[in-house]
Every structure is written in C-alpha cells, then in structure tokens.
Picture (tube, rainbow, N blue to C red):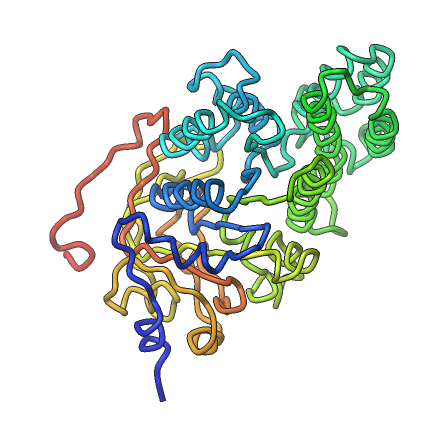
Length: 440
C-alpha cells in the first residue's frame, strides 16, 4: 500500500522560482470566479509574495476584477482609491489608515510592492475596467460610521444629520469594546435598531444619491453602503463579545462571506463577471467542516460559506504551509512586532509530512489519489498575529483533513519574516545557528 508520504512525492510539483511555478494552479482555477488564497501565518514573507504573484497572473490572464483582503473596509478603501487613481496620496501615504494593531499585516514591503503594481496596472484603464482592492473585516465600528456620515454630508445633509444622531449611541470614547460591554450589560442603550435603520435608508435612497459622473458615483454609493453594513455587523459583534448566545467567530466570518457576495453582485450588476481573489488566513479560507472548528466547536468560516453559497465550480480554496523559518509576530495582543524563529513542525502534522518528502517547496493539487491519502486528520499549524512557541501545541495546532479543507496547497519548507514598515526595537533579524534545530 502506498503511504501518504509517497503519494505526496508522486504528485507534488516542485517550485523552482520561475514564471511557470503557478501554471498548475491557473489550470486548476479554470473558469472559476472566486480564488481564496490563504496563509499559515500573518507574518510570512513568502506567503504574501506568492499571493501577490498568483494574483497578478489571475488579473492578467484570467480577468480577475478585485482583490479582497483580511483588513478593515475603510482602511483598504484608501488603498483602493490610490490604485484607481482617485486620491492625491503617495504610495506611502495610502497606507496611513492602517493604525490599528497589527499594523504590519498590511504596512509591509510585500503589500506595498503589490499596491504599486496594481496602481500602474490600472493607470490606463477606464474606471469600469480597473481592479479594486477591498477589506473584509468588521472591526472598524466608529470609522465606518464616520465614513457613512462623511459621504452623506456631500450628497444629502438631512440624512447625514439623521445618521449622526443615530450613530451617536455608539460613542463610548471611540472604544468599540467598551460600547459592547455597556450595551450587553444594560449600562447603555443598544444601537442595533438605529444601525439597521440607517443601512435600510441608505439602500432605499441609493438611486437618488447617484451623481452624473456615472460609475464613480455608483462605486462611492456602494462603498458607503458597505461601511453601513460594517456598522450593523460590528455593533452586533462587539455586543456579543460579552454574551453567550452567539459565537463571535461565526459573526465575523459571516460578515466576511457576505462582503465577498455583495462585492461580487456589485461587479456583475455593473457589467463585470464578479471575479474576486481573496487573501486571508488559512483558518478563515480553508473549509471549517474539515477541521476541529467544525467538528467540535460549532464554528464555520469563509471557505465553508463560500463553497456552500457558490459551489465547487466557482470557488477554489488554496492553503499555504511551512515547516520552519522566521515570522513577524507579537508575543501578546497589542504588543510590538518581533522577528521570531518558527519551531520545526511537530510529528504527526501535515507540515512535518510535507517536510519529510524532501522536495522542499512545492504545489500540490488535492485531487484523486493524493486527496484520498491526505483525507485522514492530521495536526496543522496556525500562527496569527501572535506566536507563542513555548505553548505551541496548545496555542497553534489543531486537527484537520487537509484534502477536504483545501483544493490545493503550497508548501514552503523554510520561510522568512515579513518586513514591516516600522520595525521597532524587537524586530531584529538573526542568523540560524548551524546546529539549529538540534543544538544544545
């Protein structure tokens, strides 16, 4: 009987650092309109670079129309305006709204280079044929509310005042967690009805808000509607942080999946094909039904919801793994970014299996025999913005059936740390000792 190790060796395609490294993936994409590109950490240079290279090819060769990332909508919207030539920002200034922890997720050299490329790509294209850059997340409660008011002040001052009055109950010193706490425990008014009504008003008056400048006006209305949706879902998210009835993970990933669906519909409604590339962590984009999240925690995620809503014929889920190397990550929430060594993967993990093939870096389509071989659950590592090697098994590993979780994976055996704009005193690159990881 052929072992999983031998199956991987037989089907893996070694990455050679050449233009054709992604030919197999583009063939696998085919005519699909949704390609979800994951990452095993939020701080690995190779994952960001590879996603950028794949996305360039999807845009140039497959006609993809938007990139949607695990970032807040208003922060990414400033980058979107830059890449479309709708702002006076320099490339560096376009990143200035990314001030919330963890800034390095988007304020880094790999994203900078991709945004610069996308700006140049869009430069000679009419508005309706430009590629956008958008955020998926819902943390921006107050900034999204302010963006809705700012939009309405330009086109409908009366409704802007209603929005200002309606959103006023959210103001707890600009602290959304404090709002959630006070609302959940009856210490302040719950803003749910106000946020829902303001979104409904914005949608109801959408045609009246459109200006004579055509597509730009249509897009700006959509951006405002999406900010209003963020306010609705963020209000519920922060309030449920202190409740017990709703899993906040599910609320967040439902918002992300809805954002993809709303943007897809917007693109199709205005002459596009709704072709979107998504960048987010493996834990969001790999199908949760094939992991501990779905088996034991009752959680679902973007990958699962997108597959359910659009089907396997439209969505391709791609994971990324590594065995060892370095990562940019913090030790605690809201702490400075550090340049940290990643321990070699654990025995019994999919990463260790991939390492033991001896191939190095490779692409593996999860089809046929190799998919059957990788269907039994294995450990899988997830490093977010925090990395705690001292408790790695508990903090960073979970069980997953990688063949059901993804349609394909890229494995980079030894990775390097993402380079932040602001490195700080704790981001100090170090050389790997010759005896690592076996030294005494």
